[in-house]
Image 1 (cartoon, one colour):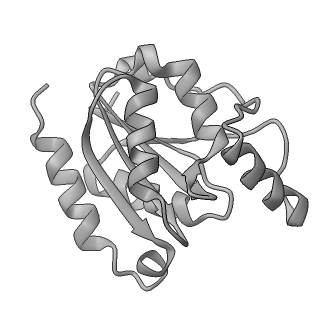
Image 2: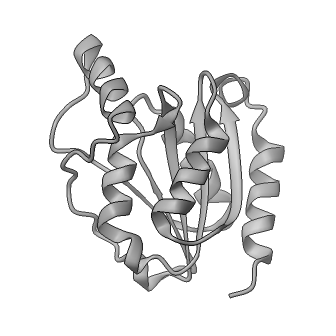
Image 3: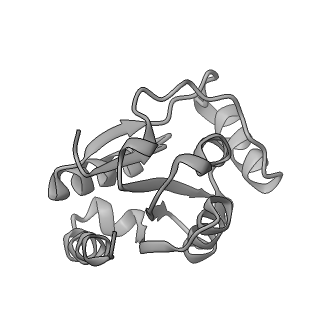
Length: 160
């Protein structure tokens, strides 16, 4: 077992790429949140926005790793319609009691990143040790390395 776990949800692969970069930089275990239902095409995209705005919690597949086994869990999510993605909401509702310390990042094409990170902290019932908001443009242009480094250093410097 490693000292931290990266749990992420990604519909398009952008958040997945950041999760892999974070996990690689801090030698963490990494695991995706998977859903029971697909989000392909326009209907899937529309469902994303609806569920985020309505604060829905869709069914997700069981996670293999126990977050309680890790001193730090890093959460990664896209921002949907300025809100937390519904699969991450489902994960937090099911696992918040097992999270000892939490850091979080979000990816977005528009806005709402800080609000999403605040919502993650509220759902966890604890402050985030580190926070990072990345735009899709920063990620696609490979200009996210400095932010990722700062994020990891902040999370690693936290007591615990």
